[in-house]
Amino acid sequence: MDETEFWEIIDSTREAAEGDPEEQADLVVDRLVQLDPDAVLDFARHFEARFNRAYHWDVWGAAWVLLGGASDDAFDNFRCWLIGQGREVYEGAVHDPDALADLLDDFDEEVDGDAEELGYAADEAYEQLTGLETPDLGLPRPPREPEGAALDFEDDRALAERFPKLWDAFRP
Image (cartoon, rainbow, N blue to C red):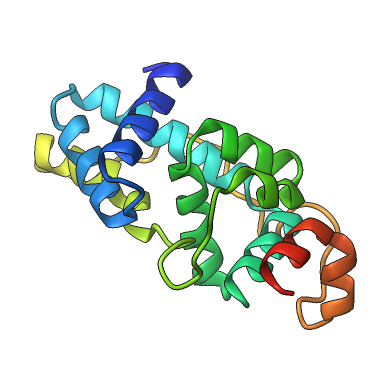
């Protein structure tokens, strides 16, 4: 599975789920169990590589602004959700997290920003196909700390300066 196929699965399942992250995760599993186990592992590698790439202080800061706070677990779930939004939103956010203000049509912190189940979709599909747990994907270990310059999430002024568009749109 190449990158284009990966994003096609993400996009088509998001559209079919009408943006519901839990439904999207179920649809991803449904799509993946139609493939062979190696293709499911390829999907898992694409997902994990993007998940690790988004492990950045600025992405975490954007999640903090959007969600009104984001613990370690909430940030993990946000990164899954970010991938689930598709290539344009994901790449835009990783390149410039403040651009999420322009990339998101709407955002409701009560229902958006959390797609934990999407992070397990490939594992579930692989287990359904093989009866086995997903093997090691052979990817480099993620860094212990997020990339980039650390942020003080408790400093509203610093967050507003770092993410002016997000702050204006979601924390007026």
